[in-house]
Image (cartoon, rainbow, N blue to C red; front, side, top):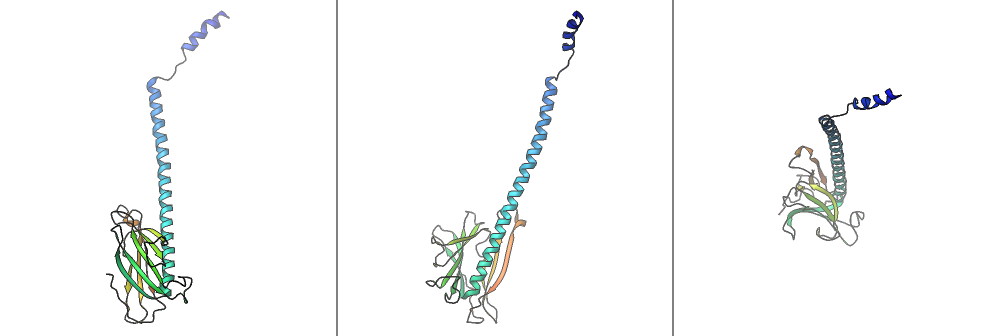
Length: 208
C-alpha cells in the first residue's frame, strides 16, 4: 500500500503535457483551416447573390421589352427625343400616340399618349432606369419604374424602312457593373413595327 502511495506522484510527474509553442502552432493551424472554410462560404454566398441579381435584372429587362413591344404595336405614331430633367441630367423619351379605342389595355380613355423614358440614376452616367407613364410626363408621380441598371440613355431610335410600317429600334443593355465586368452585359435588341401606322415609309429619326 505504501509503495503505491509513493509511486503516485512519480506517475503524475511523468505525464507530459503540451508546451506553449505546440499550443500556438495548433491554434495557428486551426485559424488557417477555419479561415479558409469561412472564405469559401463567403465567396459562395457572394457568387449566389451576384447570380440572383443578374437573373432578376435580366428578367426585368425581358418583361420591360415585352411591355414596350405591346405599346409600340398599338401606336399609330412614335417620336424619340432627348430631354434634360430638372436635376440637370439628360435622358431620352419615346412618345407613342395610341388610340384608346383600339388599345384600351395600353392606355386609358382620357389619354392617347404613352411615354417611355430613361432617367440617369448615378453621377457618372453609367446607370439608367426606364420608366413608363400615360400622363405625358415621366417626371410625374405616376411614372411606373420598369427596369434598372441600363448602361446607356439612348435605347430607342426610329427605323424608317423605304416601304412598310415605321418602327422603333430598341437596344437595351443591362449590367450592374459595366466598368469592371463589361462581359456580363445582358443586351436585348429588337425592331418593333407600329401596326397602327397609317403612313407607310414616312417617319423621322430626329432625336433633338
